[in-house]
Structure formats: C-alpha cells, structure tokens
Image 1 (cartoon, chains in turn cyan, blue):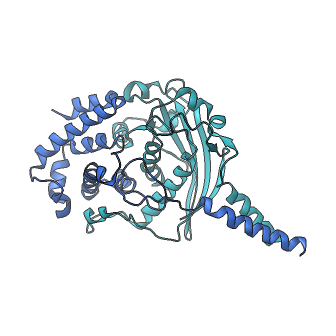
Image 2: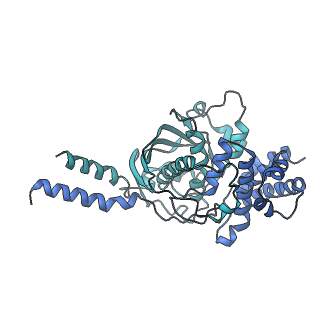
Image 3: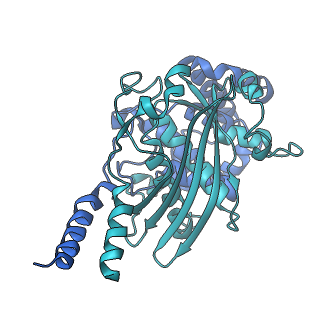
Length: 224
Length: 156
C-alpha cells in the first residue's frame, strides 16, 4: 500500500510541471494593465544558512527576464551602486515605496526574491524561492510566485561553448560546486518565468494573454 | 487484475507521461549569451562568470568577464542573434573601472589578450567603454536615465 501511496504522491508532484489550467491574463491581470518595460532586480533576501545563495540567485535572474522581452537594469551596476550604502537592505523595500527606483534607474517594476531554503543532498539540490514583482509606480504586486523545486544534478554538463578556450584554466575557473548551484537557480527561474507575460522586446508581446499559466505556489521536480 | 495492481500500473504510467514535461528542454533564447548550446541544462557563461565576479571579484574573474562581453558583442551576429539588452552597458561599465586596464594587462591570458588588437588597454578601454555605454542608450533609450550619469561619473 505504501508503494502505491508513494507513486501517487510522486505523480501529483510531477504533474505540477505540466501545463496550467489558467491563462496568463487570468493569473497576472496587473501585468497587462501596467505593461512594465524596465525591471530592476533587488539583491535576494536570503533566509537560509547558505551564504552564497544570494549571489548565485542574483547572478541568474537577469537572463530569463531579458529573454522574456524585458529591459533589465544591470544587476551588476545596481549591485555596485548599492555596495557600501549604509543600511541598504532589500527587506526595507519589499513592502515600501519604490518610486526612487523609477526616478534613478527608470525602472517600471522591481523584482524581489526571497530564498526560503536551499540545500544540497546527494546528487540533488532543493530550493524554495519566492518571486515578487512590484510596480515601481504604484507599488502594486504584479506577479507573485513561490516555487519549491528539487533538482536532480546526477548528469554533469559543461558550457558546451567555444568560449572555454578563452577561460584562464590556470586561474579561478568556476568550480562544479558553483555551477551546480547556478544551474539550480536558473532552473527555478526559468520554470517560474515561463508564465510571466512577455515584455515589449518579445515577439509575443501583448499576444500571450491566452497562453497557459500554472497556479501559484508550485512544487516541482526538475531533471537535468 | 485487482484494484491494487491497477493503481500501481496507472501511477507508473502517469509518472512516465508527465516526467518529460519537467525535464531538460531545448530552448531558443532571443539573444546570444556567450553559450552556443540552447539547453536549460547548460548554465550560460554569462550567468556563471557574473556570479564569479559578484562572489569572488578576483583579477582572473574580471578578465574572464571582459573576454565574455567581447565574445558576446563580436559573435552575437554570427550566431544569428542580437546582443542582449544591458550587456553593452555592463561591458562599458567594467571597461571604465579605473583598475580594469592594469588588471587585464597583468592577468589576462594570451587568448584573452588576442581578442584585442592593441596592448594599450588604457586608451582602448576608455574609448570602447564610453562607446559601449553610448550605444546602449542609442539602442535602448530607457537606459539613459542611469547611463547618462554613469558616463558623467566614469568618463573624465
């Protein structure tokens, strides 16, 4: 009986990866009302004991948003600008006023991420991350998703790029440990942002209202 | 066939049907990110190198990042893609950091140096950095709000 229970539970978990029963318009109407074009990414709020998790997630957020058609204010430049600013914390802004980010960076929306857990076990990594996109104009929440994900990392992959030739192999090549974590972060991001209404640089811009979207707060298993 | 066996078979069948939808898929990026494999299983060089600089900021990580930006700017078209929005801004920003020319001269590999046709990194980085920032503003006018002040600050 236990075996059946496990298999049914597994099926339920995995089924969350399938297409959703909702549309993007139904799930994220505010995105279609506001049409944010420029997004600024705040440094992740890290509630875990893994000190590197914040930087790992931070470095992986721009890519999926840019590929979804948004202009993303470089996290690299913003990160540097805020380094050394006394008392700067994303926690102070997640529910506060965001107009300063529109005035200074031209951001229409600000993305906050909260890492609830992030740990490695055997050949896998488990993550739970909340993604909240708020309007920099009105403060309204435009997109809010929490994704719990288990990543199977048993198959190792590399860059597959000729860029490898340019890397200083004698220097500080990013190790497998780090690339595994970057992989886990990007898998979670890509899974969540697959639902995000497309931005103005995407060919799907304002044509994707009926595209399927998943329900909020997903649990998923991801296999490499 | 009893109900128990039927449940097991049904569960296995359901799992097998649903499993691939959550596995690695081939994706087509809008832009060129310095990685020629369009697969979710591969972190792009951009993600890994940006993380390395954010986390470690060693001279070698900065050289890797400069080489990566140069690769993206030079090879995006050859890969039939555009340079991602924001990359020109980042590239210009990194080149215009006061210590970047010396770091590159001292720590870049031969292959990385070969990407540039000069040894005068100071002049090249200043000129190229400014040009990258201006090009970003030209292509993406929404960036002017934060790039114009950056140019004022970094280009003297």
